[in-house]
Amino acid sequence: MNTKLTLKMEKSRIDRAKEYAEKRKTSLSSLVERYFAFLADNDTETAIEITPTVKKLSGVLELESDFDLKDEKRKRLLEKYK
Image (cartoon, one colour):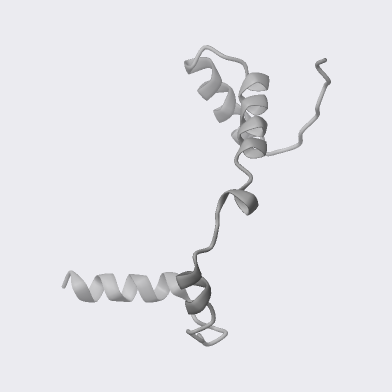
């Protein structure tokens, strides 16, 4: 049984999604339905098992509260490719 669903989002995103669907000769509703099915079938909370090694390492590193990972990565890449 099909049921109507109303979503609110930025118009530009809707327009891009419609173009995407049109290129693939499908409807936006079909894309959204398949995406929801994908999310339900690939529930990451149950699909990913944390290994004992990762559990053991969890909490080993303590970073400062203002640590910026993106900034640190940028700095290291700039240094690497000087």
